[in-house]
Image (cartoon, rainbow, N blue to C red; front, side, top):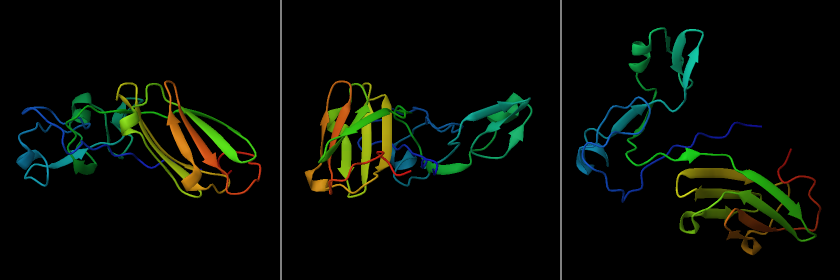
Length: 187
């Protein structure tokens, strides 16, 4: 199976940022000046950061996203970022992989994604004939679950729906044909 694509977090356009707020991306030392300078294509709007995790192995230090390794911790802190993007001044969300469970009837597949306290207003779920695209914020906005779930068989998107509950999000997928699914996703 292919690795999940990297999720690049961005600030919402209407986010209010205080002057001096540091960029939350790893190894970026920029502090917010104004929207004109620090955002929207301003003179200091480009962020150079590391998207990976710090790696400390047998005395060498580096980042999982780039090859450069050093021996001294002070030098590790000086390793320039390997990715470019926009600064992130808002709180960073924790990206998680939620537990899923499913069962089926003759006409439907019921998929439960266990994400406690999902925010209904920021919940985005879309259906295509062969996949479900899920974007959930939960745990009081601190956690994020984003995934495209490829389906074993075809569904009827316009007859599929979802319901946000206290401990989970339940998706009801209308089967396009009455075939029994041996698994939720193709193998």
